[in-house]
Length: 347
Image (cartoon, rainbow, N blue to C red; front, side, top):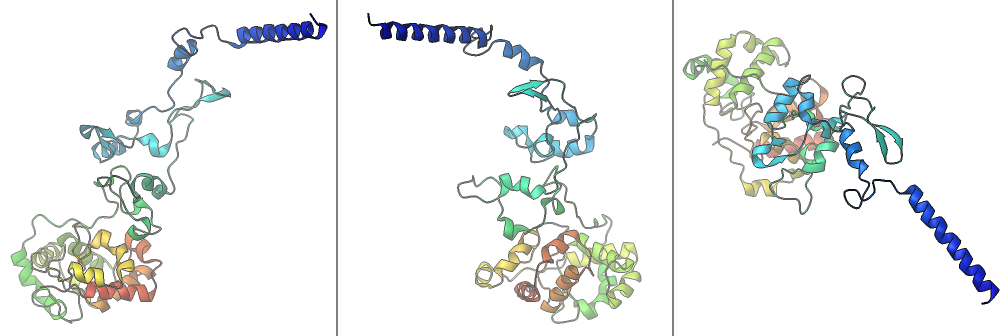
């Protein structure tokens, strides 16, 4: 046999022996104990503390927030889904020390002792992972066009982060359960000069009040009486009315009829759609709000709406939601929105 063939065979044998020795050295003794993986890893993983501890871990310290989340739309085991837990937004409650690549020790920090969880500074980035409108996303998933829905506003301005549908951050003062519309009708005579005999101003100085949300009217009268809103006539009038009579007057105007004349054809034809899209979520496309805490815009005059929007933009009226919505609106945009809703007359 040629000498170079013998040398090649010896070299191959040496490589084979080295490979066998390396395999024996680097392969864990428990490999293939329970299958095609390292068997001892089962016990190691079981003994390692969980990185995510689950929402119930937060209950002892954050009972109120846990209760809100438990009853909210993000926790619906009755529908077979739990979409969001505390750690989805705030990070894992248990940490691990990394001792090497793919190696973790059970000695990492724990919350609340020495692990501080994050409070999202921009919740909109988290919410839109699931709720931004995307082609192909299931229709039953609530979706928004971010730019039209709230612009640069953060979701928590309007929504309670722990229970988005249940607890709104800003809510109007609740109307009194003992309010009497018949008494309010008598007291409301003083309002007719500006707001109309039946709450429809018809070009009078004040806005129409017919059909307005009762709780919103109570909040507005309270704001005028305390000076939180500034209007010489309304400040004086509101201060002359008791808290009980404010509720009665609000109940009277809320019970009057005011249906919107702004139909779908008018909405589609309006050139103000891009601007008004920021208003629709709270005040409705036809000027009728679905939430008792937010006012209807039906029947309000163009000048009144322009003055109100400018007041919110300039800080003369205080409201966190409105301040964010109108902050980037130009005078032209404000006039567009006012003209759109000014066509929403009562009938």
